[in-house]
Image (cartoon, rainbow, N blue to C red; front, side):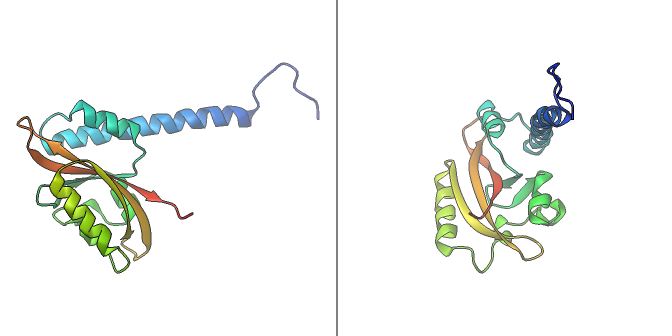
Length: 163
C-alpha cells in the first residue's frame, strides 16, 4: 500500500477528533436542557455555584426531591439508568430504588447527612426496574431559596462500574 506523504489525517484519526468534540457537545446540550427543566421545576434561577457543579460533574441522572424527600423531577438520564419512567418516580421517595442488598448502614448515613443539609456523596446498591442491582454513586446538594432555607435536594447520580 502506498504511504501518504502529504500529511493528511486518515479517516480514523479524523473520526477520533470529531467523536471527542461530539461528546463534549452532547454533554453541553444535555446540561443546557437539564438547566432549563430545573429552572422550570424550581420556579427560579439555578444558583451559579450549582451550575458550576453540574458543568464539572459527569452525572448520568439528576433527581430533585422536595424537603420531604419525595421526587418532584428527574432528567432524561434517570429512566435510561434505572428503567423506571419519570412518571413512575414522581411522588415517590428515592428509596424505591433500594433493595435487599442495599446497606442499612449507608441508608442511615444518608438520612443523617440529609438532616445536616450539606453536600455529600455516597455509593450504594440500587435496583433497576428489571431487578438488576447496580452500584450507584450519588452526590447530593441542598438547594436554598433567597432566605437561605433548604427547599429541595438535587442528586447527581452515576453508575459505578464493578472493578
